[in-house]
Length: 110
Image (cartoon, rainbow, N blue to C red; front, side, top):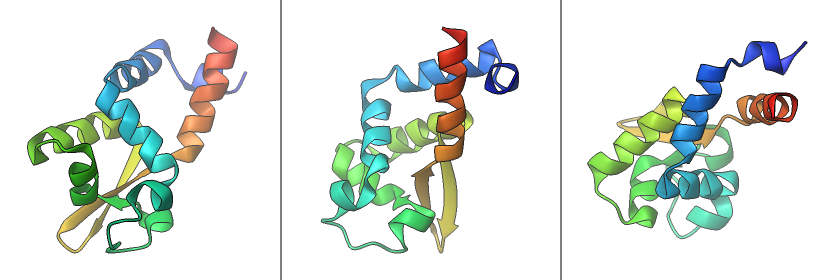
């Protein structure tokens, strides 16, 4: 059985809710290729390994810090991103393993 039994309906609904917001969906798209989308900002740490600094996500999105923090928390709760602390800053990267399982679950479920 695989992914369909691993990911229940409630988990999939949480993912759909998280991605149902255009700004959160855009952030996920940016995080897919962080070098391309965040190259204008000097990285604090390796973007591929630890992710993109939340301040860079905020700057690119043009949204308030509190809004971006809320959006990133929603994406994290849905299991779409992983946070990593580097000093006082939180960095985010996509959870590609989880995204692959979600894609597999969708293929089986829908």
